[in-house]
Amino acid sequence: MQETYVLTLYIFGQSFISNRAIKSVQQVCDESLKGNCQLTIIDISENPDITITENIIAVPLLVRERPLPKRLIFGDLNNLERIFKGLEIT
Amino acid sequence: MKKLSTGIKGLDDILYGGLPQGKITFVLGRAGTGKTLLSTQFLYEGTLVGDTGLLISFDERVSDLIDHIQSDHHDIKSLILEQSLIVDHIYFDDNTHALDEHYTLDGLKLRLDTLIKKYAVKRIVLDSFKSLFQRFEDSFNYKVELTRLLHWLRDLNITTIITGGIDNDVLGIESYIADCVVLLDQRIHGQISTRRMRVLKYRGSDHECNEYPFSISSNGILVSPLSSLKFDHSASTKRISTGIQSLDAMFKNQGFYQGSSVLVSGEAGSGKSSMAAHFIHQACLDQKKALLFLFEESEAQIKRNMLSIGIDLQPFIDINLLKVHAVRPTEKGLEKHLLSMIHAIDTFHPKVVVIDPISAFWSKDTDLGIKALMTQIIDYLKRKQITGMYMHLMHTLDSLHNESTLISSLIDTWLVLRNREVKKYRTRDLFIVKSRGMAHDQAVRSFKITDKGIVIEKDEPRG
Image 1 (spheres, rainbow over the protein chains, first blue to last red):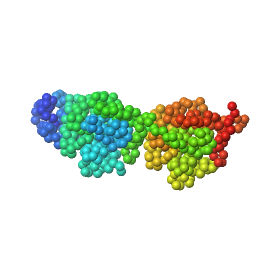
Image 2: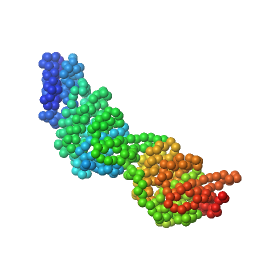
Image 3: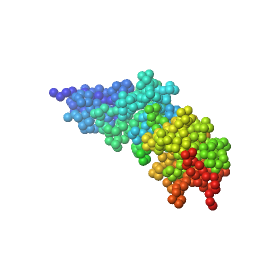
Image 4: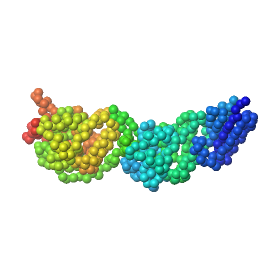
């Protein structure tokens, strides 16, 4: 059985680009990974210290925590194809 | 406008006080030109007046950076321990990929904001911002986000230094967001390396526009405190002996003006060093401290050679009336020579300085900048009312004017020594090209170098 994908999405506030990222990543989780996915969404504006502990620089940032190795992508998370490629989801 | 001292005296002078408080300064230069060091000295200086500093390195790990900037003079480690200096290394994780340009640096901004609030930071250095994005494609556009970040820091009234290389990318941003731009440069001419700095821009403030030499030592950056070439030297009417009675006679028995600059030009072996030795010897006899810079001979050589013409310098060295600095011109960078010369002058307080030869830095292939630097030394001595004698190796009489025009405006008295061949014998003569503000001998006079030194013949030459 395929290991569960653990994804973390970092966004800054409720902007158009944040909302679009949330929507796309949710879609990847629910549809493409068919629920075999554990997604956490973190708004760094509500938790600034996490920028230091988790080394957050550019947002939106999507992190594949599992399976290892860790993968990180930032930029416009609108295009599903690019999310698959960036996170090496097969 | 409020300005903050950079902790570098010479740079403060060039900036007419320091960097603009609450504004953005770009420090630009290629690798190894001293950008990080300059920026760190600024943060260090801040801690002395209670300003907490934040140093963000985008290309060096904190431990490497601390090793790099820690010195006896700048105890960075203690500052970090007492949290008056915060150092952070910000970099992208290895497996990070950029999809496109539709991102913001709000993560970085929040991170800075958190640190600024937590430690009440007043000064920030962003060291080599561009290297944060080095891993991504060159065309990657981070400028909009950087500009936003810098505007935000300015709104917070944080004094910011951002370092960068000299390329079109950074210069592009600098042109509209920077309040102040300092350029650092290192060049090699011949075998002599020189470091220079220049202030390119300073919004709302005047500044010096020239290039200034600086050096990097264990004490950090030192900028030559030489000021601009303004003709505001005071003019003494007191006289100082040349050390040669028959030469004094050519100046109405009184010698040079005190605090004036004397250029002695001559071919190889024409007696320049002998003339310098007489001058120094006499100064010491008159209880005036003398400083001799030798660039082509050692101290032992000059002492031996001068003994052969009856001048013993050793007793004056022993009682600290005379100091000899012998160095090879190529031993270190020019700016280091200048600074060590100035240091020697400032610590020894001589009344008389001899540079033998000043042309060591002055060959045909040296650029105008280096010549200009030597003129600054002359200027410095004039300001301090130190009488300077500069030995100048000339190749032919024809080249005299070409080679010397640059400094001739600073020279008050100009002597030329020549070798000539007359009926199979080499004879020597000398004449005074100019001597400002005094009556002087117009004749070309023969002279001999005897075991009692230089003797100028009294008889008028023929014609």
